[in-house]
Image 1 (cartoon, rainbow, N blue to C red):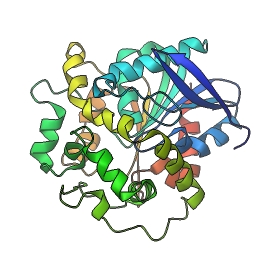
Image 2: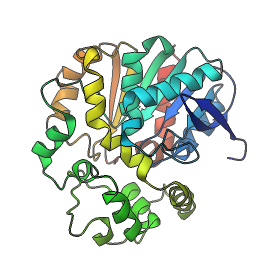
Image 3: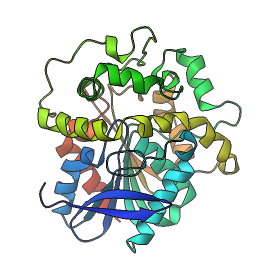
Length: 316
């Protein structure tokens, strides 16, 4: 880990922290919520040893990267803009793109908006969601799961931040990272995160040292930036109308755990396995469903994920 270099790059009006290691073709890793560049620690070390230059930023709002306060600064156009600026500042023309969770959602948009900059994509957890011109995303989630669904609960600025502060950062991190319940996460307003039981033991893939690193960074930064991705969902929907119906036209591999909440959203399995996914991502080459694996697949099964990434990108 001490071989990983940490630098700051000015891009798109913010300062972005990146972790990087290795030389060769570039792999760009995009993390999710509530995560950091650190989520890719195993991939950085493994793939850099196989001849790749691995770069993992703290995305806008996270870790040591700037966090503008307004939710309107967190649309997909902002995030993709940050990443294009990052590549331009480093003189990088094309990358292998790897995403998970919010990073996967942003990777899909990256490939829609700037496919010329991507050699191939390996995305995890969040399937491509073609823009539905008839309904805003938050309305859709609310209709499906109700007001207590976590994405709906995160919409009111300051509310989840206060809840997380009362629960304590370490408890929040453990609760997110160790969850294995594939059912829709619902957080009643009356109890919130603070009312959930403490996590008393960690799985083998997550150490107290890992939890402490995440907690230290979120203690410094707060959760506002990360939560603003959820609050910008509908604004992204409004701004991306011109791209309605565009396909993702880069070679793609998709990986998800069968216990992942995203895989168990009604209709998702049918979309993935019955042709809908391939229709919108025509160069989809492989779908991997990992049995007994939950949401944080790249941390829970790092060796398998490293092999899946390497096996795919070495073709290009």
